[in-house]
Each structure stands twice: as C-alpha cells, then as structure tokens.
Image (cartoon, rainbow, N blue to C red; front, side, top):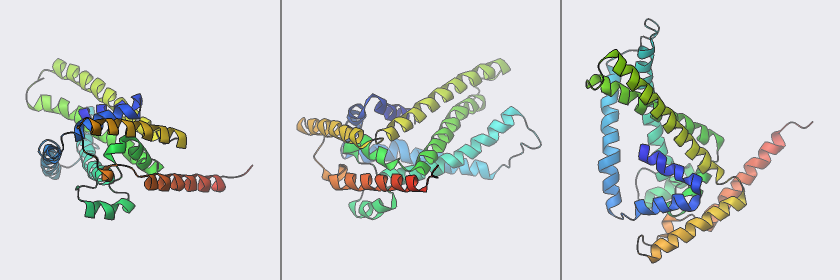
Length: 257
C-alpha cells in the first residue's frame, strides 16, 4: 500500500511522471498478473479472511470500557471491514477484477475498468470526477492508512517487539507520524489525480504527455502497442460531454439571486 500511494503521488509532478511509473510496471508484460496475484491479491484475501474470523470472535465494548486502546481496537476492526470493501470496489472501478476483453467491455458502462494504463493519469482523473467517488476514495484511503498504521503498532505488542509502557508509547508516536504522513500522501495523490481533469485544456495536455511517454516506451521495446490500454478519442469526448452536462445541470439547479 505504501508503494502504491507513493507511486500515485508522482502525479503531482505531472502526468508524464506518473505515466513513466505505470510503464515500468506494465513492462513486466505477462509476468504482471502473476506478481499481482502472488504479492497483492492472495495476501489481501488471506488477511481479509483471517481478519473476518477474528472479528466474528469478538464484540465491541467501547461503551463499557471507553479507553483509548480499546477504541483503537474497535476501530482496527471497523476500518478493516471498510478497507476490504473499498479495495474490492476500487479494483472493480479501475481494473475490472479480471483482464478479459469480453468482461471489460460489459462493465465499462457500469463504471468498471475505467483505468487505461497507457493514459494513466487522465483515465484515473476522469474516473474520479463524480464527487461521490472522490468521497468514497478519501474514506477508503483513510481507512486503509489507519488500519495499517494502527495494525503495525498492535503487531509490535502482539509479537513482543515493544513490551514496556515506554516502548509502546514511543511506538505509538512513531506509528501516528507514519499514519499521518501516509494519509497526506494518499489524499494529495487523490486531489492531484482528480485535478488533472479540472479543465479540458489541462486534460488534453496531460494526455499528450502520456501519449509521448508511451510512444517512446513502445519504440524502445519496453511495452507493446495495445489500443485497449489507451483512452480513445471517442471515450475522451464522451467523458467531456458528460462532465459538461453535469456542470450545466448544477448551474441550472443553483438558486438565482
């Protein structure tokens, strides 16, 4: 998650910078799905299943014992549930769960598989334009960050890394700073990504930078040409028209003074 959020935050340096990072990932080619499943999806599924088993064995008792540590214990489980649901939706929203053309074409109009690796920042920015999606992403990112930072602190106690009260206080401060810093990185990436489509000119400029980076990578043999991984002109125009329609509706609905 740390690597993912730091990579996303490179969008603050421009669409070309973020596109270079995505190109590096997709240069793995056929090995990429294997890496995704072995190092990302299967560990998350194992963690989620094990976590739900733990949750099923305990009930919140913060009303009876309103101590900070007990509240953190309850929040750890609540954010775990939120994080899992968010990750499932996030993967569907941007990647569509499975990389199969017959599936992708069916879910695209249902706000699934919106991410185009060869137009990374612009496609993600357009996918984040609905305000409800931006809010859900903010909530999801914060839940994931808390679950990680607080989980590291709890792990240290469970595994006997920090046992004494003083060691636990120091670890708590370190984990808090880590969590706040990662939250800033994640939310900054979200805002930067969404602002990429703030105007049509900025969106087209970003898309041009992405196309240049992708073409250079294709010429160097890092990646192969694949139109399915690009945001087509028709898709771009459709998004722009949809955004214009939404803005017009908001303007007409606003009270006149």
